Length: 293
Image 1 (cartoon, rainbow, N blue to C red):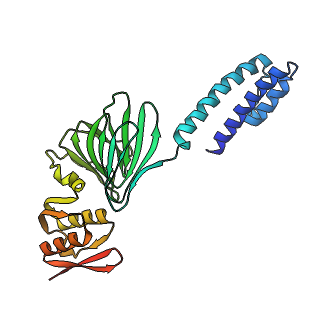
Image 2: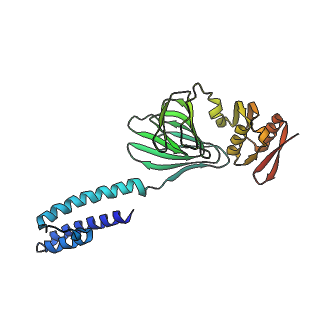
Image 3: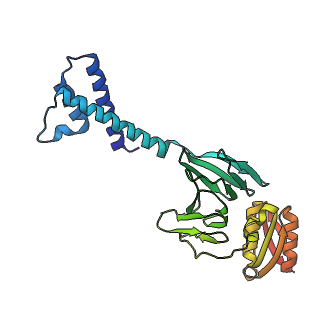
């Protein structure tokens, strides 16, 4: 907290201590106490001030105690709860069931954190990509923060990814609200729709009738693509296997359709290289370069 907040809390604590002292000693000098309080809070610098009676000081202390409790509660809720790691997927897909019965399936090299939880709200943060199956509960809001925005639901099934600075959402069932990080733009998705929040924090136009296979194919350890540039496919392999792929400029925009197995890195690279008319050569640890035949 700032120094101003520290001084305020110290002053309020002093008021509370004064009240406790009064209960123990009815002969306490109320004017002396207020002069010390004025000195602590800066009131002594005012050209005019009134000396409070002990009864008024008692009322002040009670009010101050209430304010102090509210401040401390606000601080605890907003600052003291650190994100807690719920689950982490390394080289394989990992599923976890949350306390409310919801299920989250993490793509390899992804992490899920819990940032806040009470009877009315459950908040998470995602790094990577995951498929959410949220138990319907109209009394409790379920939200996930990722990259440049957040997704809020009451009960639904959706895919959320946040690789790099881009956030992508696909809704399979139910309804979700997508909000930018600055909360200056919001959209509601219906089943079969998808959208992206780009690195500038802007929500792209909603895509209707999206093909679910292209969003949740990794659950079956496959990559399915239709009329996608080679650059997009390379990015998917980078995310899946935690590698870096270098493509020549002239090959990045080549359009491809088909599928790749995601069970083995070398097989995936060999199959993609074959389709693109070349092969991938390992340049260094976890870095691969495409070379045309």
